[in-house]
Image (cartoon, rainbow, N blue to C red; front, side, top):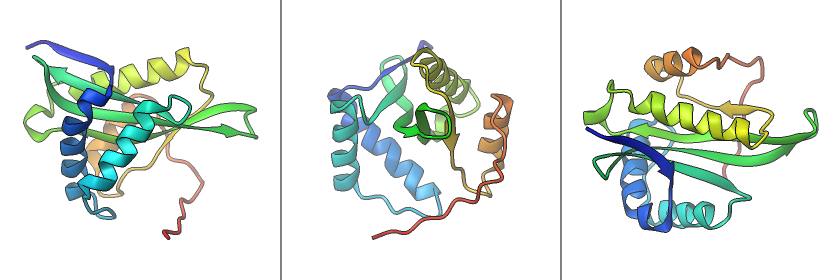
Length: 149
């Protein structure tokens, strides 16, 4: 079994779309929509100012992904990232894929001088929360709020 984590390309969109469908089937707030997902994936991959997507592959099969989406923090005076769409396909969970993805994404962020990485996770997803905490993520006193148009 050879695990690699690389930056996603346009050739990965079909596989990434499948992974997002798995994620959105699992998450309470989202519903899969492959057309919207494909548009967003292509937009991110083609514009490095927006974000970077990483794909984990085992023996050339895409088994996981994670995204870093960028903005600028006036409080920190620089570029920050939102960690999004972290998913490892069920048959490949508990094999180090999630740790490899997260480690790769955070090392990339540090190398790019990203000042903060923020993420949201389902309140009920304690398994993911334990992984994030093991990497140093802490619960924020900030309350996430949103409006969908």
